[in-house]
Structures are given as structure tokens and as C-alpha cells.
Amino acid sequence: MTLGDFDERAKEGLSALVDGEVDRAGSAASCAAWAADDRLRADWHAWHLIGDVLRSEDLAADPRDDRRLCEAIRARLQSEPLVFAPAKSGLHFGAMRAASADAGRRLGARPGRGRWGAGGAVAAGVVLVAGTFALLRPDDIAAPDRLASTAQPVTTPAVAAARSPGAESATPPLTLVADGKLIRDSRLDRYLEAHKQFAGTSALGVPSAFLRSATLDSAAR
Amino acid sequence: MLPRAALLLTFVWALAHATSASSQVAAPAVAPAPPSEVRAWLLRIHDAASRRNFQGTFVVTGGGNVASARIAHFHDGPNQYERIESLDGRQRKVFRHNDVVHTLWPVSRVALIEQRGMLSSFPALLQAGEDGIADWYEVRAEGSERVAGHEANVLAIRARDGLRYVYRLWSERISGLLLRAEIVGERGEVLETSAFSDVVIGIRPQPESVLLAMRKLDGYRVVRPVLTPTRLEAEGWAMRQLAPGFRAVSCVSRQIEAPSEAAGEAAAPPVIQSIYSDGLTYVSVFIEPFRAERHAKPMFAVMGATSTLAQRQGDWWVTVVGDTPPATLRIFAAALERRKP
Image (tube, rainbow over all chains, first blue to last red; front, side, top):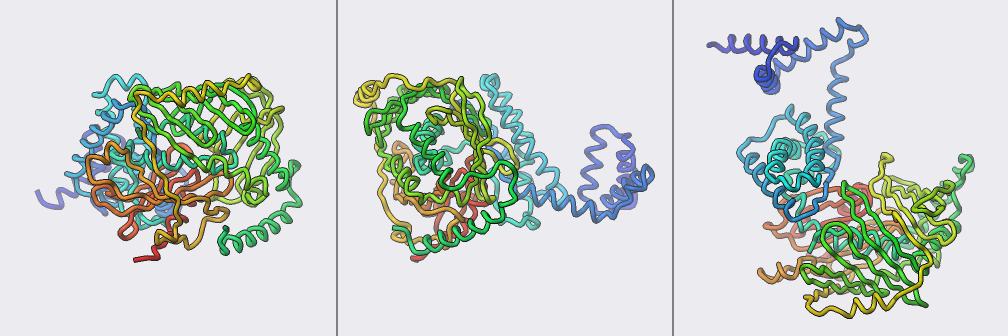
């Protein structure tokens, strides 16, 4: 098989994907192909643009607009903090840590992703948050096995997001705590606990802020 | 003991405030309350929380977590007493007599005894009108609503800049007791709610019930965290600038590791905790020596209304925690400077 054959087959696959005529495996292969190959990506974009313009001339916009939008979204996502969901019981921590440790190992074996992977991966980071909240439903506490299996697929891409280059971002590149390992880190809890001891520093303070901090148990001990 | 820079800043804020006040002449129908009234509102809320006797169920919701507690507050002359029992998760009881706070975990038989000096210091600032709250927040009355079976006045406290969150407060009409408080984020989303689901105001005070419980520590392992007052400068650090509206209120040197863990390894080095307040909210800056095995990578986390930023600075590890937008924490992190080698 020559390189040309390979290109042709990749193009056919991509064309079928645009037309919605491939199965799941075929679509995964084609997506991987366009993510890795600049020319395929250009084709993918051009075909979509042709389709769009055929449907409505209003869609004949400068492709650079799309790019700017894409980059703006990516920059914004990178400056967003990762929202944490607090855990409630020891069983939980165990299950989440086990799951994340596993995900961490898998990540270690995987090379960093390219630029194009980042967009999708950041989106998956949002799924991580949803997944974490799902983890905290009481009925899930009784099923640690299921917890682990839910946590893995969503955790891994989120880590990839955190490690993607932050060049476009205006804020200094910070690694988000996305691998779950630190999500229920008792060390973080201790800082929070130490912080809360000064709740009286607020005008709403004594005892309102005190009640607030006393009601919340940060599980530090 | 305000540093001169802070005084200068106060002057600058006053100027800025004067300018903003004049630009608000054409404001909508509900005008923001003048500073004296803002102070009166807050003092009323503060007084009610200290000088009333009440009992109820308090619920804090935020960051996907819900915690509730049974609360009783008694007041007897200058003394204040409180009993708080958690209703969710681990069993935990908190007793407070003025500045002394006991936290008991009946199952693990651990008792934490703390002296919280800061609990009483802030009202003085409010009373003296030195809080500066009105410079950074705008307070508006928003009618009345019913909360936990009581009629309440609704107050909206809007931040004048993006460095603090917005608050909505429900204050009981007769006593002023804060029945509900919401912390609202930059996009109008409620980050955290703390509220009474039911409360009885004006109950008979029973301070003995608190004092008796505070004396009964048999069988408990008592932990007394030591907080040594210090100054940032004395520790070899300085803040090049504070986030606008914030002032330094306290600085301590302390351990934050659980004692049981620290016993196994070499005693962890103390952590410096410096606290800054804008009158309504506050930020803690923690500084400790960098240790590769503990401080693996920088992080930035949000839980409910509380954000945390942690990063390495030379041979040090800096953690900034606060109930503020992340931008505020970044200002503190960026302004911290090592003065001694």
C-alpha cells in the first residue's frame, strides 16, 4: 500500500463520515485521522463549508471567524477553574482515589495530546464534573465497583485537558487538579479548615459565619 | 496599627467612592443605601446574632454538598453560648462560650479546643465606621419575603468591582436575625446558601447546658492547636499590594497537619497564615517551605463559594484560600514577595 492509497482511503472514510454513512468504529478511525493530519482537517472543514453554503449563503463566512471563536472558547475554558464536588464518607474517598489512581496510571502510559485534542478534552472536563456529582449520589456509595468504572473514562480526558498547552490563555498556566487524586485531598481540607477558623473576620461573622463554618464539616479530622 | 500604605489606600478609595457616588445621581428608583445605613443594617444583623436567644435547624448548601445542623444560641449579659450538632455525615458537636470553641467527634473520641480571638474583634471596626464596606459594596433593600416561618427584609449587597461576590441577605423583620444568606457568583449563579429551615427566636436561655458539656471531656483525646501571633514582615515576607478593599487583619504561625500524622514523620514545619478582610469576606494566605513530596503541582480549585490557589514560589509553597472570585486570590499570590533570602 502506497502513501497515496492511504490518503485516498482516509479521504473516502472522511467523506463517508461527513455524509453520516459510517459505523462507530469507522467514525472513530476517521476522527483520529483528521485530528492527526492537517490536510485531512482542511478537507473536513472545506467540505462542511461547501455543505453549509449550499444550504444557505449566509453561512459563507470567513473561516478565520470559526478559528477565532474556537480559540476564544479554548482560552476561556483554560482560565476556568475546575469545580470540585465534595465527598462525604471514607468509602467514597477510597473509591474515588482508587479510580483516579488507576486513571493516573493509564494517563502515564499515554503521550500528551496534540492541539486538536485539547478542545474535545476540555469539553470532557465538564463531563468530569458531572461525573463527580453523579459519584456522590447516595445510592452510588454502596457500589464502589460502579464508581470506579464511571470515574475512569471521564477522568482521563480531563487530565489531558489540564496538560494541553496553555499558550492562548491570558492567565499563567496552572495545572488544574483534574486527575481526581487531589479532589478529596485531606491536605486541601486542612487549609480550608484553617481558613474557616477566621470566619469571625466577616461583618456577618459572629455568629452567622461561625454557624456556617461550624455546620460544614470539611472532613479534616 | 494601620500601616501608612493602607491609610493612603483608604484615602484613594474614599476618592474613588466619592466619584462613583456622584455618577450615581441618575440611578434607578431603588437607590443604594448610604454608608451610615449600610453600617446600621450590618450592625443590626450582627447584634441580633449575638444578643438574641434562638434555636433552629441551619442548612448550608454549596458546591453540590448539603450540611445541616441543629443550633441553639444563648445570650446572658456579655456572655454568648452556642451548641451546634451536625445532622449529616459524621457525628460532631460544637460548643462555644465566647471565644472558646470545643469541637467534639463522639465516635473517634477526639476533642478540639480552640481559642478564637477573631470572633469578637470585628464589630469594633464596624462600630467605628472603619470597615470600608460601603466603599466596595452597594446595599439595597429589596422588599420583604417569608423565610423559615418569619417575615424577613431582603437586602442585596452588590460588589462594586469583580473582586468580590454578591450577597443576598434575609434579615428577620423584628429582631434582625439573619435567616438566610446567599453568595452569588459573577454570572448570577448562587454559589452557596446558608439558611435556617426553622428557627424559634426568643427562647429561654440555657447556658448551663453548654457549659456542662464543655467540662465533660473524659475519655476524649484533647487536641489544642497552637496559633502564635506574628507579622508577615517578621517572617521575611511582604505584600507588594493588597487586593483593593482588603486590609491585613491577622497573621499567625501554626501547624495545619493533623497531630497524629505528624507524629510518625519529622514534625512538619510551621505554616504562616496571613488573613485579609474587606469587611464582608476574607482571604487567607498560607506560606510554608516547599516540599517536593507534598507539593507536587500548582492547583486551582473551587468548592461552592470558596476558591483555592496553590503554587510554588521559589523555595516556598503558597496557598491562597478565600470566598472570593479567583481573580482576587491571584492578586494576593502575585503580590507576595520574599524580602529575606
